[in-house]
Image (tube, rainbow, N blue to C red; front, side):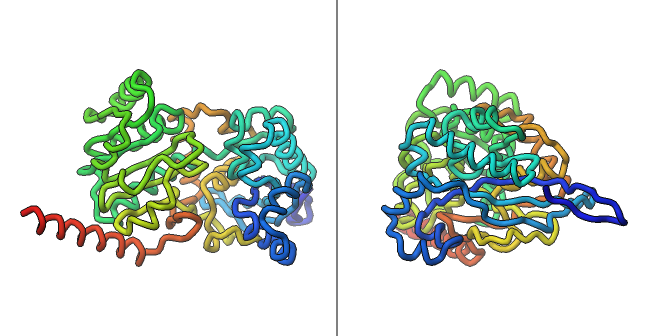
Length: 379
């Protein structure tokens, strides 16, 4: 158990643990084991990782609430399974490995556990895992939704799009997360398109969205309707990409919250006039040191990580976001909690790379040039 000394007394510091796992096997294994990651082919890493034990990654320090001055510490621990294994191995095998990783967190003395990456997607959204552990668990999906909406609106303004005059679309609106995203996004835009497979369910979501004060709501089962949208927030449970280059309007912003991704890589390869982001990066309050390079700039974290940290700062040692159903109240509550302690959306990423202001400006210029050419061709 971690502890600190203060004025002659022994006090226990509040803390958390967060599970990560290799997304790009060779690159991510090299972050912790440079030689092993270099010499092993990717196929060998995929095969062997199911036999690896959970791995202690790093000790996280320097997180301080702006509201209370409270400091917390934490640990990164790794579940060795790759995304491919998490979706192809028997669910019981995957659960067992994640639970083993959670028990490592318990041995470290963690008071709450966050599920990162695909560990939060597998099966029933953390419920089975939580039942087999002695500490509370959260998937981080509540704050992920909140920052996705906030990040989409911020990115829109950087692209010169005023949300109140914009058309937005939510792909996967019939899912729990998609429905909440639609409810949060709708009050900020002129019109919202709800896309999904089931028209009856879309009608139900439409009623919820209109309760939020947004009268201009369209439902659709046709992905071509995305061509109307200035802002797209996508969060389906599809295994393969559902958004291709031809679906998108020039100058649009696309926020992909889904795992696996909804946006095809060909979008960023072929459409230099469209901004694709993965939600917002979150700045963590205090002089945080993660003691591990997980690909973010210093002091920034994924929203799911930030939710786990915010719960520790709040002293809320109860499971927060579990299962596939998320309520608007949960998301708003987490957003308020995170804001209270000083978490802020700060920057964007796309396909594991930071999106710079220069990149956004170039995409914006490309879109303007396309529009100018279109106007010239069609006077």
